Image (cartoon, rainbow, N blue to C red):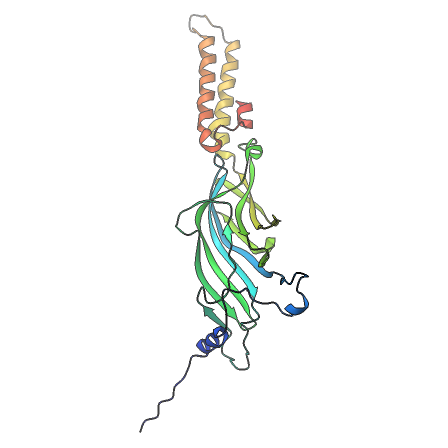
Length: 290
């Protein structure tokens, strides 16, 4: 007679035990909730750490005041209902949990103009560690994000600097609060037309709405504009001014100064039109020069 020994996966057992009485529709309790309740009986919000990693900015559209970017959003918090004993399960350091099985904070990309996919955020996975730490990874799909008004900074074109990025917002400040620092932002400007500067992460409290603004400084590389517009414009003006020292009527020269001036003006306007695709109709230093 053969004897069959039934074994179970320790990870599956941890998940089964932790989620047996778990209600994913209720925010996780805090340690010592009874002692830190507000006067009206409400519990303090869960502290959720927000990290934006592997962020790539592909383009900055100064005419539309927006950027094309993508990234990886990582949210983490402590859920006191999920820890397990390492002594009982020494081989289980972490477990993967299905989306919807536990409570998760709801956030939005508040400065998203349009996304290349149906869902701006794509769920990648939820990992729970033995101490109750929950780590939720979501991919920020490639999309166009609003930078805000850049009319003031674009005036310095082609030496303009802008501060753009991705904004993470929550409309449930009573349920959870977002935490973030400059160290929580990893970004790369994947465009040679722009030079990457320092990053800045700020939290804006708008009453019922809380927003973490991940911004990076981007300075335009003016080399192309200088060589293709400024230098030719300067040379045209030098030629135009030089006509005043050239005799208009000689045996070898028949110079039309009026035509030369008109040609210079039309050439300058044509060169200005080439920058419209960059800054639209905004008035810039380049206009002052031309």
